[in-house]
Length: 259
Image (cartoon, rainbow, N blue to C red):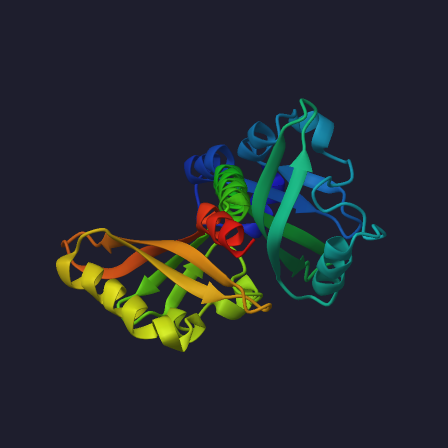
């Protein structure tokens, strides 16, 4: 515990220091990154024994010669005497990975002018895993929505596109976001289209209707549109889901008539 006592106020008693050792994730390393002290909590998180850590190169800090960009930035910062903060990860002997929100503080000994590095950690492994899980779910959901054979829009009462599952009318998803759905509706069907959207918002009920659009070859294509209200916790309706699906059978009938 002498290493920790060196960096703490002298009026702290052994009981307080013991609490820090048991509950705080702390290490102290020398200028070369070799561990001089590690709290019991640190050893618990990394599933290692203190005698295997002391004197060894700090795995989380790596060597200052490490080629990884994050470690180059880390060592460059602390060698300049500045505090560094970031997320460091370590793969344990059992294959699991821990993520630690890390703050490293350079401290110079006034007596021998040697610099040591005090590192404080916060275990954010669970938070990181939750973030990865949410990202995976989001990716799977987006992939599923994009694979749907029809367009799905979320719009405001005034038709502003808040979200869309994929491109529409040769316009990319990114370009559609923030525009108005009505901007992509042809003039001959504009009033009819908007009237049906407004009807769903005013009645707060699902509304279905059919419309048409001419493609680049001036061929008339028919679509089925479903407007479904989205309610907030107070029962208000400020947005709606719009699905637009091409009616293939109508196209086939029209083709037969032309023949």
